[in-house]
Length: 118
Image (cartoon, rainbow, N blue to C red; front, side):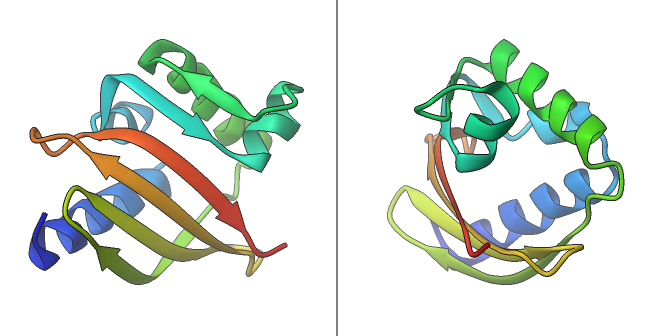
């Protein structure tokens, strides 16, 4: 993954979330996606906070958009690696997040590990 590819993915990802466009959000993920997040643990009541598969991820994101109707992200930085990217952003409440994303050769996200400041 190049620096430009990482920033492009990040900008499109944030724009999709800020538009609350679930189809555009889901376009970033492979079918076999795995996401682990403390927010997933909270919203879904699962101790490991893991969501597996695109259908389950879509349901989780839908639930999140409903739970946080004023959700808005501000991209602060993007770190890029060989087949990965880290998005560093803040939400409308000022909570900072860092999401490590593994990316497939097709440019789709295969795994996410989300971390939050508060």
